[in-house]
Length: 256
Image 1 (cartoon, rainbow, N blue to C red):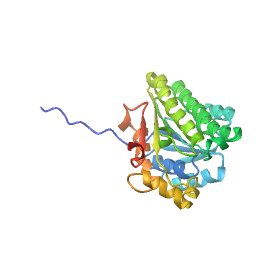
Image 2: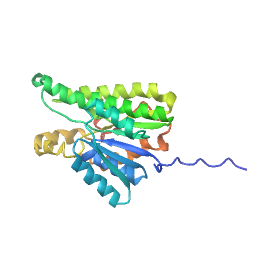
Image 3: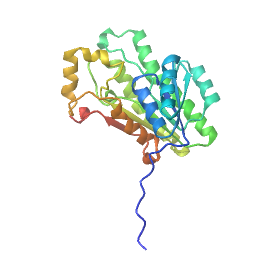
Image 4: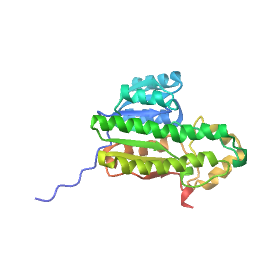
C-alpha cells in the first residue's frame, strides 16, 4: 500500500475562544468578523461599549458567535481581572494601538506615554494575562500581535510608532521562547498602511498618499481584507509550527 497523501491542516477554528482588542473599528473589527466566520467564539473588547456592541451584533446576525466586553487595556488591574473572570482564550489578536505622527524634536513626554503605554505596555500585559490563563487551564494557544512594517524599517515623523512596533517585534520573539514549552505560540503581523478610520485622514494629504504609494510596490493602499488570511492562518492549526516570527503584509515596502 502506498503511503497516504498528506492532509492539509484545518483553517477552521470551531470550539476555540478568541479575544480581539481594539475591536470596535478598522483592523480589530475585521479580525473579529473573520475569526467568527472561521468558527471561533469571539469576545470583542474596547473602551467604547457602543462600537463593540454594534459589531458583535452584526457578527451574530451573520450567524457567528460574538460578545462585547468593555475594557480599557491601559488599566492593568482591569486587564488582570478580565482574564481571571473570562479566560482562557486560545486565540488573542493583540490589536489595540494608536499613533501620534510628528518629527522627533516635537515629541512631548505626554505623546511618548500615550503611544508607548498603549502600543507596548498594554500589549505586553494583555498577552501576559492571556498566557497565564492558558497555562492555568493547561491549554495551547496563539498570540497574534498587530505590528507594522514600521517595526522593521524607519519612517519620517514615526519615531514613537517605530519605537513601539520594533519593541513589539522583539517582545513577541521573547514570548515565543518563554511560552514554547507550554505550546503557546507568539507571532506578529506587520502590515503596510491599511485604510482604516485611524489612517484615512492621513490620505487626504495628496503628497503623503503619493509618497506611500511610491513605496508600496503593488501600487495600492492596503485594505483590512488583506490581513484576514494571515490572521486566520496564525490562529489555526495550519501554522502549528510557526512561532517567533513576523508575517509582513506590506506590498513589497520592505523588500526594497
